Length: 412
Image (tube, rainbow, N blue to C red):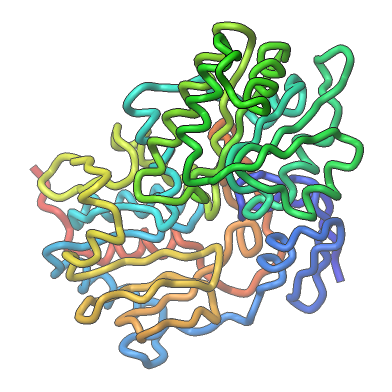
């Protein structure tokens, strides 16, 4: 048995780096927290499996060659999922460039509800550390972030603000109810719930912006909240866009961004868009710094073409004739339309709706190999360690081998 202290959790984007994880005969158990995400993900360590080609066991070399052949002959390949660490994302982009693929992350829908606004107008955003150290009023808009990020309040809200005097903080929930676990976690931190329809977040945010300077015509609860925002020393507006209802949730995000701007005319305020599952932030960062454009980009034709509508993976999979799907963080893979040649790099024990053409089991970043993953506030790349050795290759190694198995490009 071995005990690992201060282990980094790479799964939900909070970047918790204080876990105590025990290993016994290749099985892991988190002992320091009741976080359901950490317990479930670290607890999923089934034995290694051999690769499969056409549903039959194969060597890794044979599976790599089969994957390379599928991608080489594809006319419209899709490299997606991208549930991997920074090194895996870099290798995925390098391979996508070789075969002219579209690249996207499975979790990009929630990410793009924020990025669409950032691309149109920019925003004033903060970090987890600034929230913990400076914020005296946290406004949580929409669904409780703890549903996706269970330790959000424990890690970043409960500690008293280090740079505020007095070191006090209050929390307001707007258009969303706090979970029972959140109510318990907040303890003595005062909080208020202002009920509302999550589908009306944009309208409520607009009314709140107006009430900052014209409180007389606002509903009493909105006028009272506007007064508290004006009186705050450092307010933070947090939201989880992936939980917003409706096809145009980016418009609700845009209203929240404008609310932050309006509050900043009176006092200090910043937004905190919460995201980060399966290193979606890291995949987007890698894509942006290597290609100059974010995810949802085609590498066919010799130059990156970015189109957040056309090249969303759920849409482009209808057009693609081959799919390379990467899911190293969890044993879940979506069902693909029939007739697609699918190459899956996935955790052992992953269930498929239909057997892919090629399956290569891979290790989990932060469990089977050391890795870098980005925190959900986009600022920090955290280094995780290796906890066990199941003999599984990492995504970067497999994709590098697949690229090497492709026909070599002619030199000039």
